[in-house]
Amino acid sequence: MSDNIPEIRVYFSKLAHGSILDAGCNVGSYAKLLKKRGNVVGIDIDRNALYKAPYKHKILASLTNLPFKPDIFDFVWATAVIEHVVPDCLLEIIRVGKELFFLTPNKNAPIDILRRLLGKKGTWESPDHVRLWTIGELKKYGKIYGEGNGLPKRSFWARIPLIDRLCFYMPRFSYVILLYIDKKQLKRY
Image (cartoon, rainbow, N blue to C red):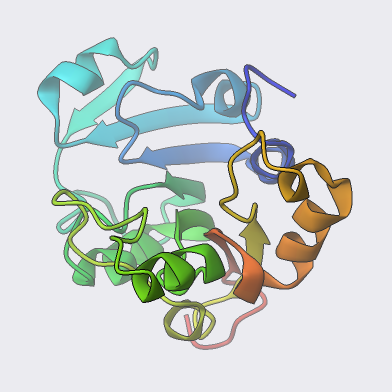
């Protein structure tokens, strides 16, 4: 693993190639992985975070109105970003990339459903989350995978390696949704 980045994210980062957009890059948490794969442009709306991002090319802009032509990037990396902006941004990000990888919280993660039943807030319920997505809403765009179950690392169940594999192949049980889009394979784009 690379700097405590989950194995599944490292796997998807290896699909990145050519011209890469790190959409909502913040301070560039994935810069080491992405810079090995191609020429990366970081874009974010937070000037202070963008300043810290270790990219040569950085753009201060909103993901709701990207200053790029359609399909200009070979690969778009958008992790933990679409839940922070209006839903329209998803289509805007898809517009500029040929292959795309999104990571976002699973609104219907079993652990959060249980928390709500117990009268507690879901772990993803946060004032800075504008919109949480479900698997059903995202699967129309591409292939869905899952990551992790949301259990504390100290938990007995979280230590069983098969649990993470189960979440990857059965995203309904996952804490996080991974969406992979390859426009060459999808005729609607």
